Image (cartoon, rainbow, N blue to C red; front, top):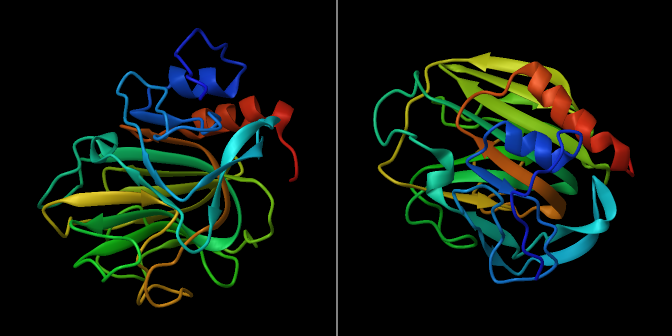
Length: 255
């Protein structure tokens, strides 16, 4: 098992660029093996994997590892503290967050938020949001939180089920959500966002999607590769998003 540290990564390197911007969670996913998904921040928000596989082909280094999700049982449980002070009741108008991830897929949920308890593959939780997913038509759909309707999403038509690496950043800042895809702003949504439960669990690689657009009924497992997942306690700016993308470009393959 490779153990990464916060050892003076240069800003020209993707790891250094991400760490300089203060994430609460950063999973390089390049460790090849291990019982947890290692967090590279000082917060040690390690993930708990279920039937994932480490494979070669990180978007920043084809010789480094990323994680393959099998589309039927693979997922990673994300520790709730990674998402900071997300309120348990009332409006989130003063809340800010960013989620960043690289993926290549034929479809499925990348990030999901569910009320607790929630067990992937089991009964639907009382509340759920497939926060980032590639739908059955190949469109990318993003609704980081619940805005009151399953139709309150930012939609990028893609196609994103093309088996190529894509870089996605979704930000939420004081009522406005913004989506960046492959370094470019792809859309925004502004609305009143209200939390829907008293506790939350987060999953990478699956989520309940019943009644959400262009999804199967039940849990929609991700098929493909995910790498370089990070969460920030504020909304990344467009220049920051571009800087992250450019830091990865020297090793980017298959796009």
